[in-house]
Length: 370
Image 1 (cartoon, rainbow, N blue to C red):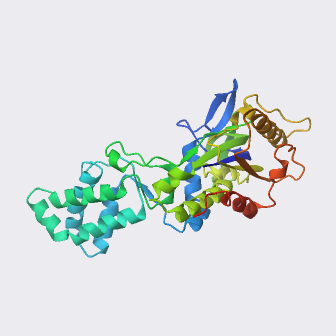
Image 2: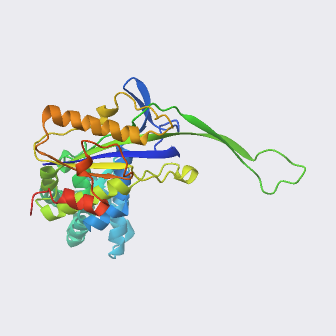
Image 3: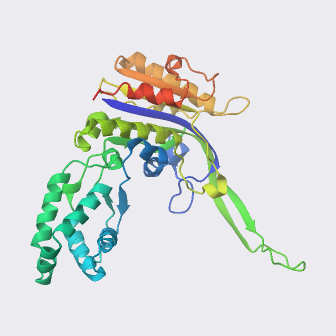
């Protein structure tokens, strides 16, 4: 069972996702340069959007290079001396993620319940752990971490980890295969980068003084993006330890946040808070997975009076029709949202839902019943 999301979203001038030079990310597709937003950027904006946690009713997992800091804070709040807490946290981190006590180069992904469980186990076995460490050994911590690894193998309590996965090369026992694939968003058309030359005025200059106090350039572009993501239902349920109810809430949170979330890059300078113009969700029981990116392999061109959104919608609709005609669509159940009632839809016209709530409900109804 797959659940796919296809989004057409036109952003006003912006720099939502920068590369290492500060320029908007881009790529070549169909022989022309396209604007691009990385999948990492999109996933972060989804998991941090309030709609995700509101739907799942579970605390977000934490990405951090500072496992010891996280543990020390909790242990000190529990009444332990800071020097002892630091020693115990260092020993636990070294075993848990195979880190040197001064190493903060590894980015961990931990659920709130995993962190609480680790702290509770350390507190329960506190005296034994301290005695071991005083002798330069750590059998108690070795035992605790082995127990945690067994409990956490291929499962998590955090919906965001279950969706996006966890990979730790230093300790593969903690790895979790992602249930969700997210593509890099690309523009449906050719895009050229532009530059904004800006200056800042010193408010305390006298009338005799002239010139800017600061000047510089900010690169930007504007584009209509195609976004694609796919959730594998069975993998999601497995990652959540068989909790189908939580998996359903995770899907709901993802659907809502995917539609509502907007990357935050340079928003104070551009305020490109633009909602999608079209959202297509597809529940699939045929085992297929269709990215519709090739609808735009031939770049969309502006219409006679301008505008790329309608042309992009028409291209996506036509490509969907060709796929269904060629490969069959018996196991695909589409549900669509469009802002423009006059949108040029033919093949997907019957799939239109009246509003976001109805769209979410229609897709959730296709999931296996608990």
